[in-house]
Length: 135
Image 1 (cartoon, rainbow, N blue to C red):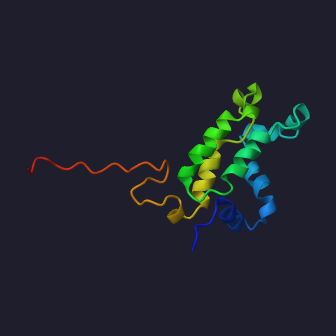
Image 2 (cartoon, rainbow, N blue to C red):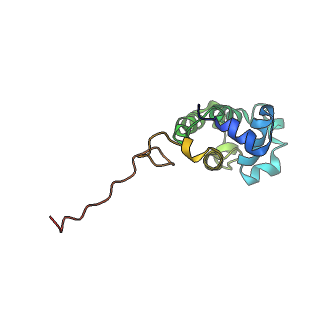
Image 3 (cartoon, helix red, strand yellow):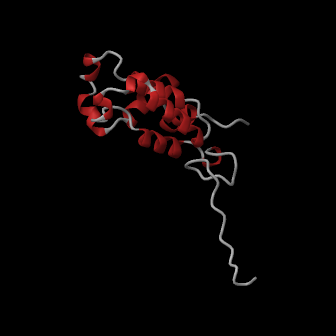
């Protein structure tokens, strides 16, 4: 049995059809201040939220939380993510909120494949310090 994707888990958890996935994730991961002017920003720039939706479509097929890092880096480098409204005022989706949403949505067993890896970063869990006094 294959691991479910983030989109599959999110839609099942929220009882949504797949075509509503991107909009629902978008609304949940926007910075709060962005909700106030969300309707105005596309009037300024028709493709204002292009980077945000590219990020959401990028994480749609994730099966492990540790793969989020590559998508977040791609989001930071996105050409549409360079404006001062996005960088200074954070009128965009929050990568921290998106990562938290992925963490709470994916089943614990699918967040990472190696039991020696931590959930957050996919890095090795520190080993226990052994007492040298008994040597």
